[in-house]
Image 1 (cartoon, rainbow, N blue to C red):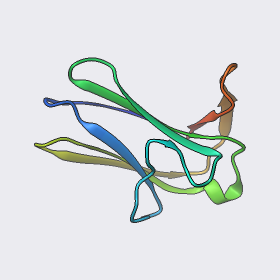
Image 2 (cartoon, helix red, strand yellow):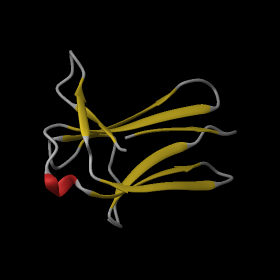
Image 3 (cartoon, one colour):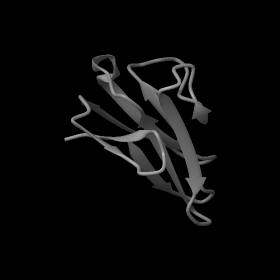
Image 4 (cartoon, helix red, strand yellow):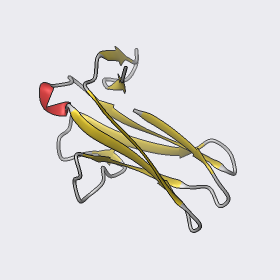
Amino acid sequence: MICRATGNPPPDIMFHKDSQQNPFSQGVQSDPRIFMEQRRLDEHTTEAALLINDVLRTDDGLYACIAHNQRIRSKFSLQRRPKLCRRASLVNYCILFFS
């Protein structure tokens, strides 16, 4: 799942799954199959990706991408089963694509 947000100041992005209280944190999660990264694309734009290796049925659920800065908070949610996992050639993670 990839989210991109623009704002002034540039927003931070976090991901939640199924109303979990704690969002996914930057880097490898307690489940080492899951990785979250965030980067600044320019002075106003942030992009974040939630990456899952070896997708399981338990990865189904409601995922939320939340972008926020000092002025505003925006949330995008979708409930889908990952249908396609594309592996990056040099990285052992896959990006979730939802239909």
